[in-house]
Length: 406
Image 1 (cartoon, rainbow, N blue to C red):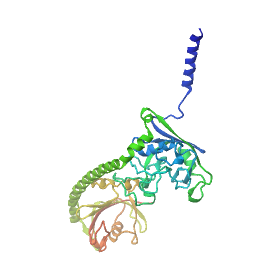
Image 2: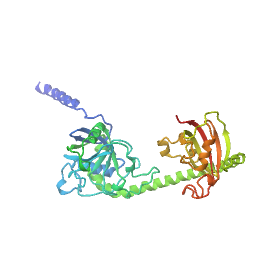
Image 3: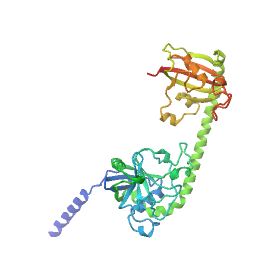
Image 4: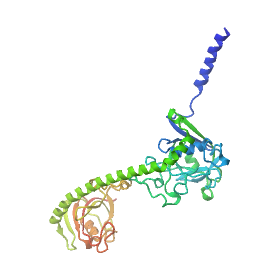
């Protein structure tokens, strides 16, 4: 009777113990780092699939298993008890140095491992601090906002020349916060003294590695670091070659679009020029649409859409998105800055515009859209505007006055 009663009771006890053990966080499968500070906790997802060496380095240090650390750090959880020694509000918080000076290291340096998929694109990005190319060690930072100037890759997917800027100019992203962005923000707001060091220590009590799912549980940090470190250069070179080929193909497509659009618009320029009326200054104008809106007074700001061309039909510049798309010249930075929109321009003889453009604006009223041919002396003249506009170059523009700025 005792045995029959004991076994079910034991089973019930085990079941109760197991069922009450709940995970600390609701996280999907993956590898995570828990940063327990004296100001609360942050959790970051680590991208061990994209930058395995950099993640392995961090994990091995955090767990006290790194094969290359100095003797004084062997078998010790490296980050526990360190501080965020450099805090810059609106930029980042930096930690990972047991000396809290910014010059401490674990006894080794390893090469940059970059992924074009990982960018300093927002707050909470976890990235390696360095003192130049291939000087990674133990120090890391967490961004407070997007800091794309720290990215290794340019917009076209090619690597920057990473030695040109202070601090190397390129930093290896290896994770991002999934919990605790508010904690990062609180840390960034602490009072700092010389060298942006917090007046009161912000202590990193513990860094705990959390493995969820079979793949993450198989991640052997010391082994990955040792085996994959020699392959970094090879992987980066392969990625750069792929990016180069992609950039070349995109340039080929762009060149084809530019050539086709240029040839097509050359005919239009010739047609409009033949129809244009020449003014006493030498400026030629052909109205494409006559508006009935107000005419701006001298000194007022008019909202202008413009398309600037060389006389062979090649596009110089435009704030009309569809035009630059047609020429394969769409500019992501102009899109981001909302520059594909009517541009405020001063209607005045003292406006910061070339002579012909000032005269053109003075002829227009709201609703007008006209073609203008600028002989070189009314454009950039004998000096030109190298490298885009050579000396003594005639230009053609289509200008539309959309409104008068209130």
